[in-house]
Every structure is written in structure tokens, then in C-alpha cells.
Image (cartoon, rainbow, N blue to C red; front, side):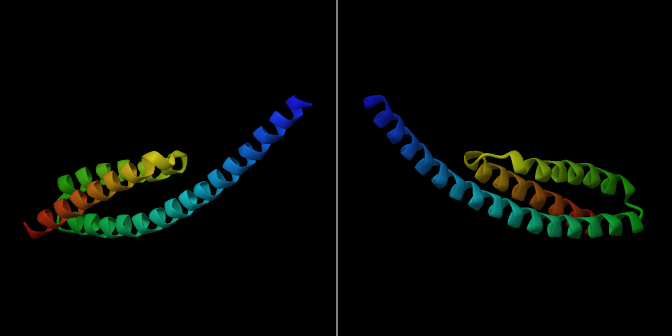
Length: 111
């Protein structure tokens, strides 16, 4: 009988953690979806700058930015497998990388 009491406690605790984890997981999914949408808009803006560079015959710079942009796009797709603890780090690293690419594009466009 004691075994069943212990088992009942384990299930109760387990389901409680599961629900809490589920809510956290749902919040993470929403945050990732929002991030992907915003990142997509920023990458589209970068695409316009790359097209402008190509139009101005700055092909080498455009190619360099395209390669970096493609890596960022790949990292966005990998965010779905990101844990809560790694999410903040990934989001910050992505934002910094995107900022650097936009700055490079602006610099080359001004040349």
C-alpha cells in the first residue's frame, strides 16, 4: 500500500512539473516564433542592401554578406531545438551578428 502512495506522489509531482514545463515550453515557442518573424524582416532588409551592392557593382562585398546572411538564416532554423537556457544567448548572438552585417553593408554602400 505504501508503494502506491509513493507512486501517487511521484505522479502528482511529475504532472505538476510537466504542466509547468509545458507552460514554459509554450512561452519559449511563442518567443521563438516572434523572434523568427522579426529576424526574417531584418534579413529581408539586408537582402535589399545586398541587391543594392550588386547594382553598384560591389559584388565581392555582396557575396561576403550573402554567405554570412545564409549562416544566420540557418541558425534561425535551428532555434526550434534550442533549450530555454540557451535561448537568451542565441538571441543575443544573432542580434549582434545581424547588427554587424547591417553595419558592413552600410559602410560599403557609402564607399
